[in-house]
Length: 90
Image 1 (cartoon, rainbow, N blue to C red):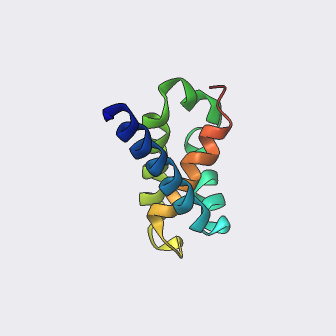
Image 2 (cartoon, rainbow, N blue to C red):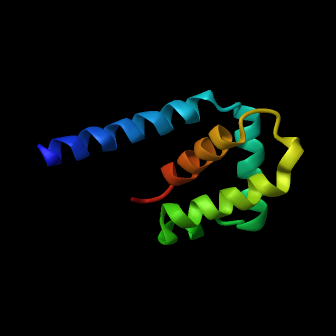
């Protein structure tokens, strides 16, 4: 039963983050990714560090962009993380 609860909780977290990413403004997401690319010209170099390293890089970009982002910063950050991780080989 405990394994089932963990599986359900994990699925809910994935769905929740996917919905948040879907709610993000594509223009804001592109702006964040561009900012990350300026700091890390080879986005693939972030991949070996895993999701935590990608999240840190995106958080830096979101913080530096500040008021330039028009919509929900959390959803924008999550969408940017998902797009960068989608390009990773794992």
